[in-house]
Length: 197
Image: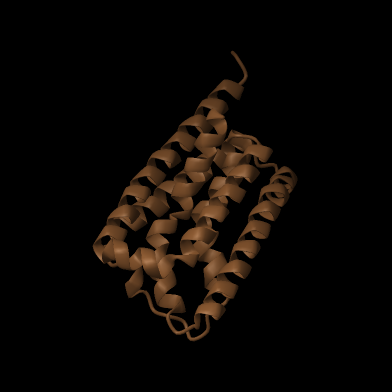
């Protein structure tokens, strides 16, 4: 249960569904309610499939390339730290992002639901917490994403732009801390695997 909670929180922070809500509202404001709901359902299913494929195929690719678990923990942790720093330094709201002329599975499923930080967390988490644990965390997180995205208009109005930005910054700070944890874990594994003199 403790491993599941850790993996769930790590992925929840990486997805940052609360910070993404204003962006989703801006992207889908020209769609009808039915079109918006159908898009969110399809995007959630696509994000789930992409996440699962990435978990299992990623490990095979790493084996072929000779990348160790500790290598990817350090690399993944550094990426999470970079993503977190980038988000912390950005002062503009997601709502200020340009709205594409056509909205589909891109950018809703990728990168809004399954962005680089989430994919990195899935890959690192499959080794850190176990494959079945991270898959269960992915399913539960995407269920939460689905519910919140379906209620995005209501939630965004209730929170307001400033509160949404504040949540985003808090999640970015937590993401940085999780990144440091992955780097520390990877370095410890590297040191422990060195041959004794």
